[in-house]
Image (cartoon, rainbow, N blue to C red):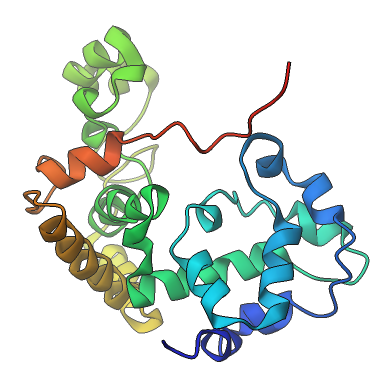
Length: 239
């Protein structure tokens, strides 16, 4: 087993986020995710303070670390200056680095994020790009979005956007030199390498599950991770 605690400690976010937790539970009380999910920031800090690599490995392979929205409400209320949100970031990073993210339903969705938002940032310079939000992958958007998607250029023109156009304006085409700079930032900071690891480990998991995995969003594995929902993530409230 890798020396997980010390690997986490190499991450500055981990060193800044875990100082002297007294397990008061304030972070859980203020956490929006804890209201809805089976998720307790206090419990995560409790596990990390044990330095038990077995428990940390279970955490890295779990759905738990993917429930946090990283709003950092926990940081503002902690009486000891801890930052559970930063700890979640370091846990997620190590889970991706070691491939443990493929062991959980929510973790496997990292591939979907990489192939949508990650791809769009590098290709278009935007986190979301309307023509790429396919109605078949988002049935919750209903027939209105299906119509808008088919008529996207006319809709954007009516809204006053400079859609894919040159010069200023909403949803304009980002100049190639700016896109090259974005790619370079991802490359230098390790983002491209991390994307490659997400692809590598996801491909391995797809083979284990006997699923087809290609590039893009239209293969069996992508469709599975995009839509799978065990229904076990939300907190069970008693009537």
